[in-house]
Amino acid sequence: MTEYGKQLGVTETNIPGLVVFDLPVHGDARGWFKENWQREKMTALGLPDFGPVQNNISFNDAVGTTRGIHAEPWDKWVSVATGRIFGAWVDLREGPTFGAVFTTELDPSKAIFVPRGVGNSYQTLEPDTAYTYLVNDHWSPDAAYSFLNLADETAAIEWPVPLADVEISPKDLAHPRLADVTPIPPRKILVLGANGQLGRALRAEYGDAPHIEYADRASIDLATNDLATARRWRDYGTIINAAAYTKVDLAETPEGRREAWAANVTGVAALARLATENGITLVHVSSDYVFDGTLDRPYTEDDPVCPLGVYGQTKAAGDAIVSTVPGHYIVRTSWVIGEGNNFVRTMASLAERGIDPKVVDDQVGRLTFTEDIARGIRHLLGGRADYGIYNLAGSGDPRSWADIAREVFHLAGHDSGRVTPVTSEAYNAATDGTAAPRPRNSVLNVSKLESAGFSAVDVETGLSRYLHG
Image 1 (cartoon, one colour):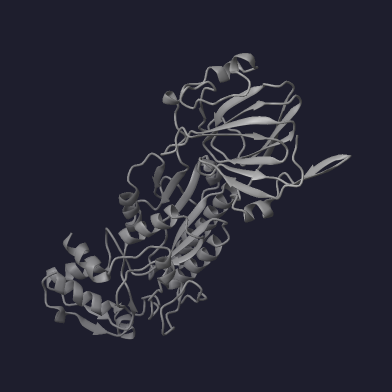
Image 2 (cartoon, rainbow, N blue to C red):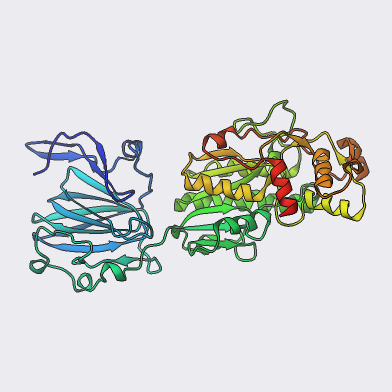
């Protein structure tokens, strides 16, 4: 008997992400009415905005019709239009809750959200039962499915009607026991720009887990027309975009300008479109160059962008595009140091070779080590921090490039007095004016990320560790 007049409500279960909803059903002598799926109200109660693309109905004539246990690589919103079922759900995802079981009855006044990888099954308790479900992906023969036998002794589901007395398909009867089930893996993480400074740090952070993929420009070209079919994108949960055009000075040339806009804007737009269409979280690494550096305080995430040069303009445009993706993290960083050629390596090399450099002392910021950026990205994703922009930079007092050069000389065992400080104007004149404009103040306020539980290494400690291993 359908219960009328309930309030819309949520009940958590012992299976993470499996959530039961009470649905208000309004009835009179003519019948009843309910809002079976109401995005605004249900997401306000914590239901993922899972983006259904298909609605299916399974009609069952007789009491005891039994189907399952099927785990699919998509989310489902399960409800009953007429009749009543006994439902059983088994967690078949990789992880500590693999094999966990939850059972309940559903009538038109209840529904359940079944996350990707949780095995779904039911048995009808009334004749003429219409079982209906929304899914957020289309069926595909290439998708990874898992199945569990309805009579599995470990799950030990207490079916109201004994399985020996009900209609079950031969295929369902042949499904494996729990010990032989292939768990559904998590949605994949794709790292782009995997051979760059940050890409190598992300490789070190995430390792070789089966659900992590690394790609360089040769394996995924963001400008290609068939990018949408290059992968089964619904199998991906996150794309980390560590790829970018970063040749700041060359970006001011005609050829460099074209390449910068192609990589940092056109390519990012393709990623944003993929992420939006497939429910993928997009992590995009940005730069202090989106600011002109004229403020007399550290820049916050809410400060308006005002880039000086072409590189900064393309990064600002990319940020604006990524901000339209429902699930996005824009990680803004500064003065990046990692494996490969960079300012610190150059200064250490000059010190060893006996060359005394002239280094600008009127541009101020903080070094950021790639291992910290990789660690911070993982922290945001693992902690499910609120989507948005996060500044990520090293901690400690801001310094000029000349200050850092002197510290590198000192740590390398050389006289820091060999470094001569110069103004940006003098440095640009020495390069025949080919240097791109750079912000004088690149200091980023990192309090938002710290409030999310992450702190980067102190620059002094990080610099010493970087140089000495």
